[in-house]
Length: 216
Length: 216
DNA sequence: GTCTATAGCAGGATAGAC
DNA sequence: GTCTATCCTGCTATAGAC
Image 1 (cartoon, chains in turn red, orange, brown, green):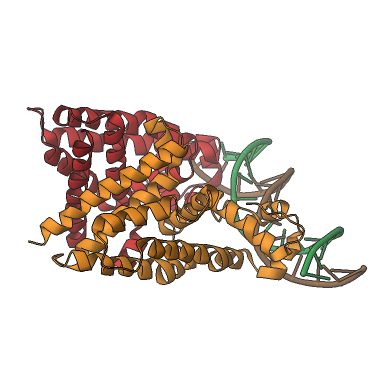
Image 2 (tube, chains in turn orange, yellow, purple, red; image 1 turned 45 degrees about the horizontal axis):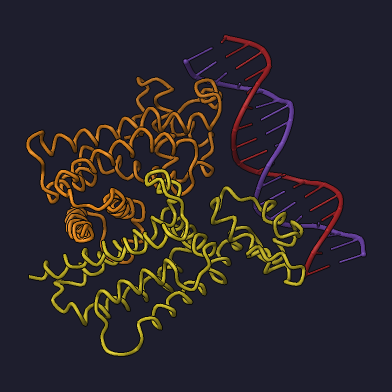
């Protein structure tokens, strides 16, 4: 990342660096001065392109975060294939692996879910955007896939909560790295990330069985 | 909460209001001026009692957060009883219900986990304290309990990850209320909280089976 | 479209009276 | 221990030259 190419125009450099900083430190903790220092431009350039700080933040979601999320979703769809209804195991594995390994680089993924976790913990106008454009379409798509296999599921309620449970794990293992590392004693190297992915898949797959049984 | 008693001394009022505000908006977003307004005292009083803002924040954890967490843990131990080894179901249910309903009021709990989620997403010196004083003792205690029932569990690795998975759900459903509400269409009323509690117990209990099977 | 310069304000922290 | 008054830094945002 940090493509400080003098070739890329100022506006794009600002967006790139702003996203990194907002993810790392949160909206309030990042000053415009910090952003311009990283993107090697002038203070006034930010206001010229984005008017005010808040708009820059929202533009990060519009032009960087959302397209990236859609790329992940596309990868998920492709990895399932368009054939016959997939098994829950296949769906859960594809979902987890797409998100945890998927098309994103390690830095992109970390940045992506840090931003998302921040928005959910302390919503701004961006959360509405995220939910409308990304979460709701994705969740209802996966619900649809699982309903083909779990027609028993009492209400969509149970399925939705299970999806949120899966999602919470993925989010947590991404944004709470410091705590996870201290607790488990393991660094986020390749081996541990693979271990995590397997764990989330197994845990969630069994968790989903609860939905099946509940649909009595 | 917000015990603005003029009886309580200034120091305590400052801590109470600071905790609420830090939980709601995060460290950087809260100004000392905001805190003194809520705790009805003077700007200089904060510096008199805590020296600087950072110390106030840490003191919130030392004198408010940690004791509360320990109260929750005590409740958990008592609810299990000191008899023979409990079943995983009993442990998981006791854990979830203690945390989600437990000895805390609704406001306390929300505040508690908001603060915790913030610390994990963006660690300060307080995270070390939290982990050392609260998370590690608690996790190893529960691991101990579960090991009596799951002696098969390959390595403690799997058990620890499962505990983190449970924990991530509890944390998520607490700090991401806005998103959960928008996605599920349900408010956090009594009924939904009971539903959530049941869901987390069921999902996690089945998830734990993964550990059993893995210990092949 | 990018720069320099600066207005204008909010925040953390301190001095010193009571 | 709590107050008023004040300092000073660092921030957002704008004006205006190039």
